[in-house]
Image 1 (cartoon, rainbow, N blue to C red):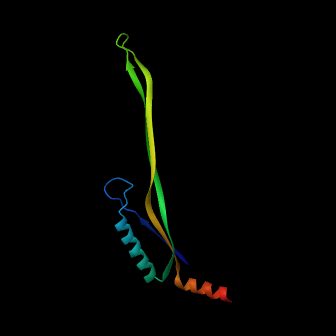
Image 2: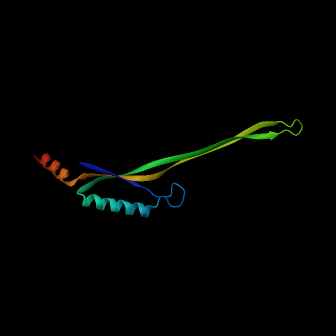
Image 3: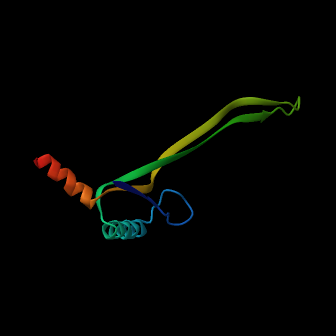
Length: 107
């Protein structure tokens, strides 16, 4: 029997991307102790990455003093994207299931 635990990464400050590593490691440690107490053995700890982006594109307007009209005189744009750690997934298997499968392999 498998069990999966999701641990949400917490960020330092109000911006995404600056993970509180100390808090995350404490959350992982607490989860591992709970799994062990419940009779599970961790099989994998997997990071989960999320991403975000932003962009902007604007025309540059020129105002003609004689006609009073605005004309487009080019433009500009920018964009960026980045990824960040959003959390961790811990997958564990019940200890007695691990030993049972090892016994079957020996036979």
